[in-house]
Picture (cartoon, rainbow, N blue to C red):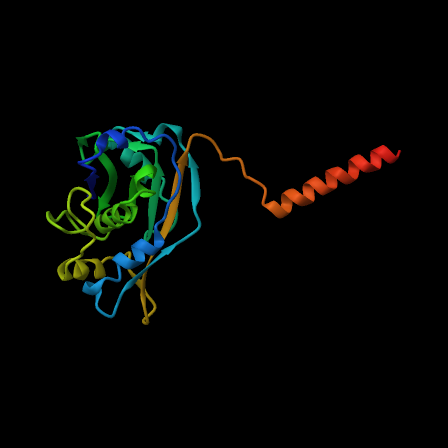
Length: 219
């Protein structure tokens, strides 16, 4: 059975409770740096971010129970060796614990985790995503100046032992020349987003409208 592990923002939980709108921040460069640090030796793991998806699920924008976490993870998009990053407004439940300071929750092990959008986009965003991904890869909490400390601590260190555990995960793929992990970012929304026309499309639309107007005037 998969367990849920949470990450706490112990020094700023009041801010966490005030998140307003979900959005995606992937922090790919930060993730690549974390999974290529010295403990990985000459075999870093590339974090590959795929095309973002959007799921309309207003009841899951603010997670307050373990049942809602399970419901969210049951929406998994893609194959079993693809990790889903879910971005929501707020989360205050994980693994049976209720705490307003929770900012992320991930399966241990598994292929799904959820974070608060506001913190994924902030100063500790890379650390937050890498920590929850670490749980998916089989890493438990490790108290101290490490990535897997139970709360955000501005440290992303992974031990050689943790790297060995990561390499055994089925989420780590290889072609014989390199290693990588595929990620699907998933945004949870209350309603479908309204697409904004690209500038070139908008210009063409305005020109066509202008042409029709001028043509009508000539008549």
